[in-house]
Amino acid sequence: GAGVSQSPSNKVTEKGKDVELRCDPISGHTALYWYRQSLGQGLEFLIYFQGNSAPDKSGLPSDRFSAERTGGSVSTLTIQRTQQEDSAVYLCASSEGQVNNQPQHFGDGTRLSIL
Amino acid sequence: AQKITQTQPGMFVQEKEAVTLDCTYDTSDPSYGLFWYKQPSSGEMIFLIYQGSYDQQNATEGRYSLNFQKARKSANLVISASQLGDSAMYFCAMRENNQGGKLIFGQGTELSVKP
Picture 1 (cartoon, rainbow over the protein chains, first blue to last red):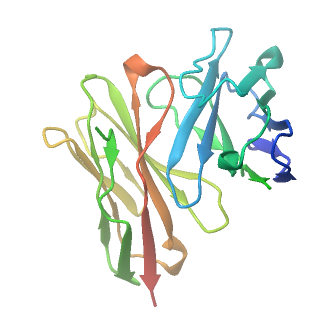
Picture 2: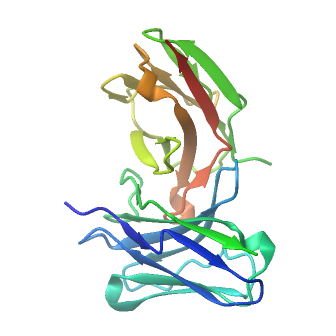
Picture 3: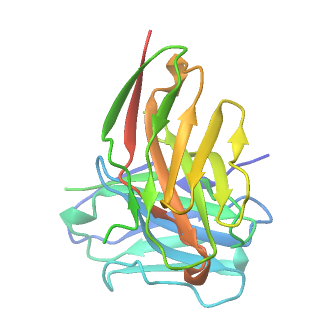
């Protein structure tokens, strides 16, 4: 079946512009997560959505970052007034729920470069 | 304090040999899960194996096994009969039940398999 789909795969933009990154989770997965991976680093949690519950936004680095999930499916991560330190690979994952033993399945990521 | 520590930035192993990748964790939550992911140079995150905090036996998945020592808070990944295709970054991650669904990742270990 189809895995987690992210678009675009690459995005180059100028400092100060807004960007939108899209994630389409695996069908039927109720939990959706966003992570950020800087060059040579581990993954940093940003935000996650579980069903109709309020999202956990505790990992968002600043108020320039926001995310929404419409209809319990597709999610969009928005970064406003981008800065060079926002350059990273943004990874989306989904899982069947937030039960401990459910692995998160990752998309291929969006590589964001801020000039 | 680091929640997940991977002390080996890089490891080498001879093809067909076994290798152990170290991971220690820190949590006060009695209910948690530990995951290992593989990230090849192509960038995708591939789920390998899961160990729950209440599991009595070490997890195994094919050539992967997890050496879970709860009292020492370690969850080392053992790869048997290494193959050239095992060359990749390996990440240990933890999910704490009282923190919802987010994963906390270590910094990773880069494994190189020599022919």
